[in-house]
Length: 218
Image (cartoon, rainbow, N blue to C red; front, side):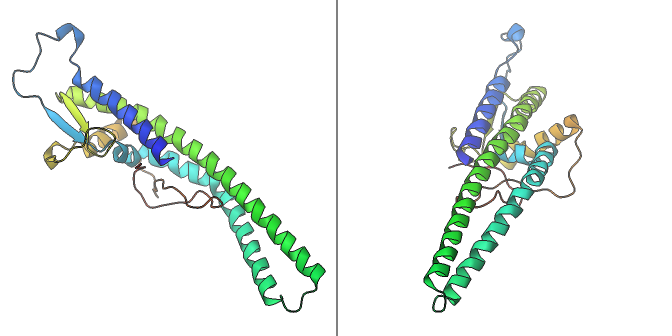
């Protein structure tokens, strides 16, 4: 998912930067800036993840997957209990009982693996759609902000798939300003408790909650 979200953000960022770099067609010659090009930098993915819109959608996504998270937690507890029983009773269990418990353990492990993989796939798809939906709208806000403030070029300082920004003066970073402009335009208040996405680990793990940070890819 990381790479997919990175691609979504990169495409949206490219569209926004290209649009911001184009002067109005009817005034392409007469309104060209006389001085040096005005350039800004933004951390596009981080900015999208910081918006109230994304934070609210992500919180809703966490609620949606909470039942599945609890289901996998219960399965994991059952597996752990069975493993302890087999270890503790290995010397006293008859062959038939040992085989029964071992079969039950194997079935539960397979159930958890299958359920975890299905949950992870569904979560990744929902996460991609959630981030992409906000990213496309955020790109429009970035485009409008860049035009309103006379920027000729806006570089994505947080996206290593685009030309790398080696150095940028903090004064030209418009991340916070564009996030605030987007929040005002959307009219969505900040959620009481915010969290941002992070990839989960392990095929049988449920989609997990995490501390606020932007989706990132490598």
